Amino acid sequence: MSVDNPQLSGLAQRLVRDNLISLDEALEAVAESKLEKEPLVQYLVKRNIIEASSVASAAADEFGTPLIDLDAFAIDIAPRDVVDKRLIVKHSALPLYQRGNRLFLAMADPTNIRALDEIKFNTGMGTEAILVEADKLYLALERFVANAESALGDALSGTDDDFDGLVLEDEGDGALDDGEQEEVDEAPIVRFINKVLLDAIKGGASDIHFEPYEKAYRIRFRTDGVLHEVTKPPTALSTRLAARLKVMSQMDISERRVPQDGRIKLRVSKTKAIDFRVNTLPTLFGEKIVLRILDPSSAQLGIDALGYEDFQKSLYMDALNQPQGMILVTGPTGSGKTVSLYTGLNILNTPERNISTAEDPVEINLEGINQVQVNNKVGLTFAEALRSFLRQDPDIVMVGEIRDLETAEIGIKAAQTGHLVLSTLHTNSAPETLTRLLNMGVPAFNVATTVSLIIAQRLARRLCPECKEETEIPDDILAQEGFNNIGIEKEEFELYKAVGCSKCSNGYKGRVGVYETVKITPKISSLIMEGGNSLEIADAAAEEGFNNLRISALRKVAQGLTSLEEANRVTKD
Image (cartoon, rainbow, N blue to C red; front, top):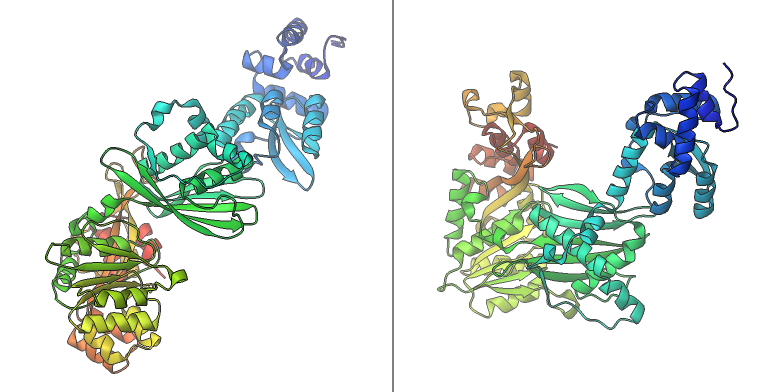
């Protein structure tokens, strides 16, 4: 049957020819779609006249256009800011990928030349259609637009009531020109930043990363030690977001060439305030800004909440109750060293004691403790602060970090003359901490007689109690991983795996500390004096019954607190 009809497009004729629709239905659909100012494909699919897959196959055969399954394509990596969102929605043309100066667009109707031409004019790039099924395209378009501006859209569509109780204290008011002031004070940007900060606080994040790239801008939260992307606002907002954060942090908004440091204090209720430590870093495509969330309540957790084994807790408490000596906490950035130190200081913080700390920076304000912010620019170094402390009759001194021989020597001298000294180093284990001090140039005798306790630590994600599932691990794998040495019988193991539910993040919720707590015993002290290396000291610590980080992590697995995969992530070489 001939279906040539001047009222029918090539696609409509092909649909009739393939018996997917009758001639009368085709004529009616063409007329109605024109009346509704709706593309023919969209009209047919949305009214369930023809299945989207059938329309797509017919169009691919008719026009020789490549057809792909959109479900198999990662929409999240599609170029977001190449085409104006208005054009994407107007023409139902989704950017899929870019090769050089050519842009490939997912379209349900490859005959929409107007769309290709308008996007080509708007972007200055060559355009080419890739055929996809209409129903999948419309879902992908909704997801694409939502992802591009999800958090921003929430902030714009919310009411001011969303931010009741959120008060910014001591907001900077640096001298800005009219354009910069308008950029900073723009209400949607203010509300968007407020929402991001509140979401991070509510989600238990420890850091917020604002990251500009050439063709994208992303915001990530670090939750339970792992970064995850939360939104991708348009790149056009990059400078406005940076400007708002810098004003909140009392930084110089006009300085974009060098890193800056600042702080934000948000009062989220009448009784609770959250501090943010803020750092900017000029990158190739703008300023990356990272906010470290400092929740004062984390310093009030108490030692029982940190995850120490009973034996390890006893060692820490005994060392804290000594009138003198040095306690060292070691581990990488983000391993919880500050919380361990603050917990110890809170235990010691009584009206009878004079406690002073030198920190860079001061992260959490502690009532009753004299906290000093190190400032190298004016000569207030750790060593200089420590010298001043010793002139003010302290009982307990905390040095944020031992970075050089001078600080180490003053700290050692303070510990030898009747003061309890707490500090940190960046090493991977307790034995390496001792050799680091020796390598700095501290005499072996001073290390052996002054250091009383070393705590090496990591933070492992805690399994969600709501969704974790019991699992079986073969005996040979258990032996291979080292479970034979953890001091817990296999019959007592509680092995679980992460699952994931609405109340957690990928099967984990919160974190638990993993510790290597080593007391400097006479045997270890003698080994230090004899010039023993870190491996020999580690062997001696094991013989004395001090669990290393690996064994401590496996014990947490056997107790059902975390998974073997997580233990391997934080402790396995």
